[in-house]
Length: 378
Ligand SMILES: Nc1ncnc2c1ncn2[C@@H]1O[C@H](COP(=O)(O)OP(=O)(O)O)[C@@H](O)[C@H]1O
Ligand code: SF4
Ligand SMILES: [Mg+2]
Image 1 (tube, rainbow, N blue to C red):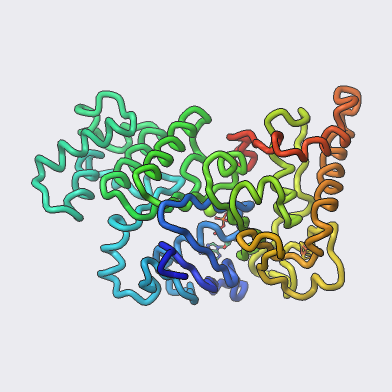
Image 2: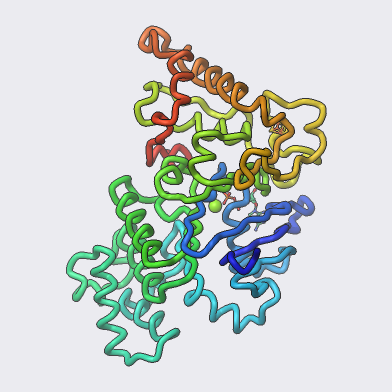
């Protein structure tokens, strides 16, 4: 099986030794990415998205960190590769884009020099040729007047331009995999859309993408497959259509209900998931979502494993609810969530409350709005 996968992460665990004791940020996570695929990784802040990808890239170098599991990339285990080989993979076979583009740019060199060096690190080309390619790449990512901007320093670029420059660096090496961690979170909606277009373009040229975001709208637009994370574990995983049209895990229901659907009811206040995200220093033995789950029952004290319902082996979730009950429980949960939010302004919303929300379960209504970025809101 693994020969068809580009990235095959198995039972990844990451823990930190802190003054409060050992905290487990990633707790037995498995995920895979096929060549050319876009995997959207979603989950609230603190669910272990960044830490798991930093572990995959071997960028957690702090001595207080313990990482275990397997990270098979093109059938090599990145966790056991010599540093030198790992450095060669980063930037050439795997490129990275982070929320803060300054983590990838050095303030003291011009943007063009940094892109040119990236090219020269992996290809035998002259300085001059690399410079010309850098201008071309900056132009490709939509930097106006690239021939002169190539000589600017990162601080002379806006945030959106810096993120484009980092993507230009990724484009420079046509990576087999791009890992992008909240690449658009700090940007306004128009620039966000442009950056997503660039990622689509990179993908169209053959790169697989792992896109981490807490914006379900973004995932609904761009991902082939979706992984929903909670408490450092996978809560649900499957093809985009399956997850958006037939979400199975109560946590995924909560995430989806907190994003407006295109053509769905207009709510002044969106429903939120009750309770606070689980902290990695107090992960329950059983289901990590149990303290917030309205459907919690006795069995939830035992940890549910990610498994598929008999009808579709590509769509898996970690929840003890019976697969046959999910659809009706989902509708009831959505009606309750929308109903509660609606109750606050019942007069304005008369006639478009819970009943309307349940109508929204048909497929046509399962398109989610992009850029409703509640966590980034002040
Ligand atoms: N250096 C660290 N020391 C201790 N805990 C950490 C450290 N880095 C991250 N964590 C914890 O790991 C958990 C997962 O973090 P992170 O992967 O950044 O979440 P996400 O990217 O999903 O928002 C968080 O609860 C965070 O507090
Ligand atoms: S396993 Fe139990 S607590 Fe966890 S999501 Fe399912 S019903 Fe809720
Ligand atoms: Mg993060």
